[in-house]
Length: 265
Length: 156
Image (cartoon, rainbow over all chains, first blue to last red; front, top):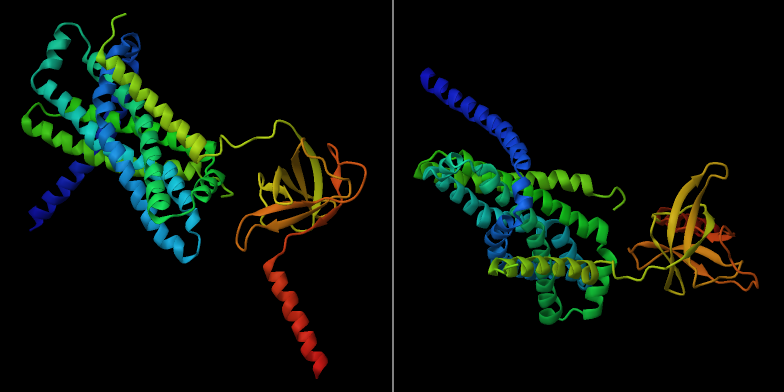
């Protein structure tokens, strides 16, 4: 009995220390990626190729889910706003919730599961098949040739994807609110324009997605780079990427929102 | 320079991102809204500004003619001093009155300007002397109850 408790406590402590170690190692890894970014700037084609794989190929899922999220927001918002006779405010509801919160957050979650997991699996497999070691042997730094371009591609793609997500969501809200339910077209857009501020709402959303882009790609590349070079190790690393990116995105979102909220609104 | 398909996709991707941002800024946001090129500032003192905020609209006959530029408390007169930035395209007589109004029953508060009949016009740095404070609901109810009680007392 006592042995079992001792074992459980030991495992708990091990997991905790492993988590702390991971945070420290990831920070050092982030610094190394930044230091190794020179090649990405000089050979920008490497980054562009990764933008194609992480960003362009994520477009379909981003566009479709943005549309659906906007449509659901429109339907749900209409149900509630109707009670107060404020159904024209549906544009405000859809636009503000997308631009401030849902756009950056949901796009980042989708990006983490669509592109982040792929990055981890790819790098992990490159490590397992000793491609990274081979590069090192040829005096090509895997850090600047493999990791940094993927990092920068993610940082570029994320704000673009979030903006597309929000725009598609607003279009979805328009489809449901104006075309399907029949809210007045003029009131829909004019109330939205009166409520959404470019600096406080749109630009803050872009800043958020930028931060999420950094977080997701650092986690994805680190997990791939750190994965044990076995099939099991790579699969575990891929799972960890999705789980810890999702948690990091949501926690960062709370912190960023607390910083960005205006005192008077 | 040789062109690859990746270039095309990258270009399309970045353009799509900028287009989306432009839509957010112009169609959903207020960046496309007309901003007055030049403004002149006038002061107004109020006993109570209620929930008026900086950047709240200033309207005359319901038309947006400016915005609230600054609000501070005048510690000598114990009144709120509000600076209004008015669009230079519009001029108002010197005896224009300013009142703090609410759009709708629960909407945002704004400053309403009612033009007077003076020949002279308001200029930069002038003061609007006739002002009407915001209606505070609690005071309104208090006054109502008070007058009701007086009526009842009179009857007895």
